[in-house]
Amino acid sequence: MSTLEEIKAAAAELHPDEQVELFRWWIQTDVFKQRQLAILKRELAVGLDQLDQGHYRTYDDVNVMRLADDIGRAGSDRLKRTRKKPQA
Figure 1: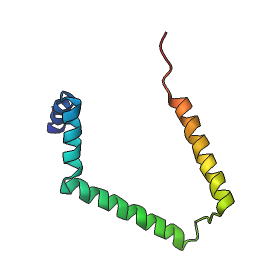
Figure 2: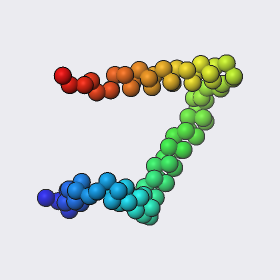
Figure 3: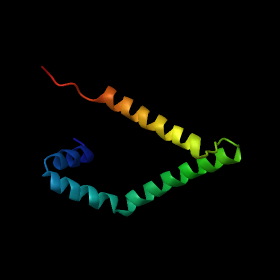
Figure 4: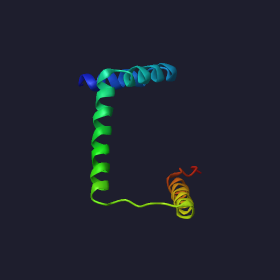
């Protein structure tokens, strides 16, 4: 068993409050912060590149509400599809 698998197994045996504490510790580490920053920088670079290429849409009061409705409807539909059905 690899060290990572051992850590995962040990974490699975922790009380839920201890798992939360472990997660909080991890997200405060420099390694985690550096990885998140690198991801953010890549995503920003992609977004800026898309803007430079003219790949964007502007919204006004009417179509932004339509967008919000579409997103809400898509989210509701996704929840309905993924919700587990009770077993008989």
